[in-house]
Length: 378
Image 1 (cartoon, rainbow, N blue to C red):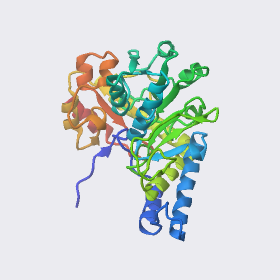
Image 2 (image 1 turned 30 degrees about the vertical axis):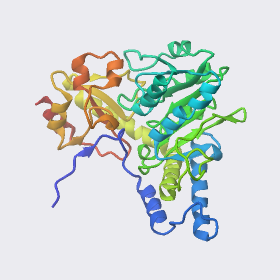
Image 3 (image 1 turned 120 degrees about the vertical axis):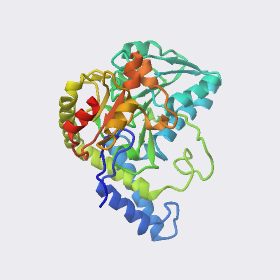
């Protein structure tokens, strides 16, 4: 008899797979395994049809067009393509200024830093103490030479949502390209991403109950013009020449269905997450928690918390048999360093060292709250 697994509460790192999505993926791996690029037989035709359907499902979620959906390996690649792919055009047109924030995911920070080393000028707009960027301060940094504005929709560590709608509105008369890393909100916060002034949206399948290894960069046409991206790799010309290589049809079909389910079920899922959040906050109240971020501006499925007198490492050891949580971004966890996000927010050292990220979803069962709190109390 196997030991009981702890309750998984690290959904911002990766989500469980929706059973319906898993069944569809297996179908395309085991039965409909044709290459989408094969034009001479029915296997290829059905694969092509599956990819087209996925484009439609994903485009519908954000009110885009199917031809604006570019498949990638995930949001990291999408972010790199959106940022580095603009560099040549920016240099040739005298647009070498970028505006972003220091709380972005490393998949945005590092490509921008590469451009900074290559002569681009970057304005980093720091967040307020509540983890949210002031849109007015952000807009003040945009100038005539600005090539790109990149802002995440919600932070992966704190769950704090950012004012992408206000920035989009402020950029209506500015030609700079607006990129949103929506890895944490795609299929969850639906309406904000339908804003037509958002030129590029990055997302990953494994953040919306779909498969790992697939994602999208949605590149909207503005006044019939697409952002002038160049590919990062070459060979084959797939995905409108922006992302060559054989398309992973099973993963793409799974991502398409995950997007469709996100559109159809986001209301129900959000309610379950809010109910879970209320129980979580009630359970930990006697530990005098410090929630990092302003309530009401935080995703319903995320809580970044520190408890007085206990480090994050010690807390995780105490509750590891009950719940699986993290102390930061999974993408930077190989070598632990204090969170760049919490540092940018200006938190005290003990709060940063003690910060735990709890993240859940509509599929998360309730843990034993009482035992968890007792273990945290030591």
